[in-house]
Length: 259
Ligand code: GRF
Image (cartoon, rainbow, N blue to C red):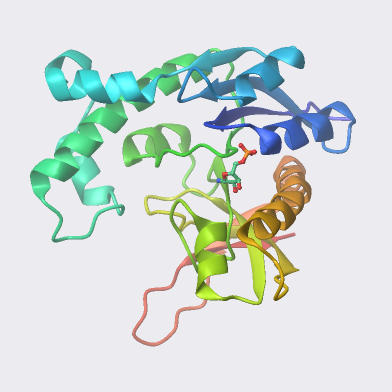
């Protein structure tokens, strides 16, 4: 058997997805090793799950980095920060967004992300897995991880059937819209919000008597199956990102083919 794929997990919350992935690795269901888990806050529940599994952890406290950046950007923004390059690439804000606001966002993200990169550097991971990491990543981080343009190396799980309901409350938005089906999506991360090439999706019925809590419960159960399976496909080298078919008047988008 070849070497296992080395992954890093990034979390913000309870870390039930992180746990499902750790379990899938430990039981040998996927040829993957979780080498490190990082969090954007010191009280993230995922940290203790990793520690219990003997996995090293680190914290980049985004809240304090954002605070420090507001007070003294020059003191925290990394030396290789290129505002114009990031402005041109980022797709989180529209063209009419206030320039100063976008600049402040990119400065604080690059400051935090340079710390993430520093913490990850020691582990030379093959894949960064966002497992309930509630921070959008800027091109500063994405470009430094995705060094091969044909093989993205950052995965995310989103609690809705993308491209419907991007953003922070996928299950809530699905439920409030009155959908009869909910779901979750694993995708590669690109410069936009939940907009990268889709790797896998799982769906579940929403019954008339279901509450939002029921929807979240059903969704999470699907996430715990879907995410390890998608990471397994990556580990087996079966994911290929190619250009999809263009439709007249629309730019073609990158899609994932499973081999
Ligand atoms: C999941 O629903 C995931 O889709 C979303 O945040 C939640 C994280 O849950 N991005 P957990 O921390 O893995 O339990």
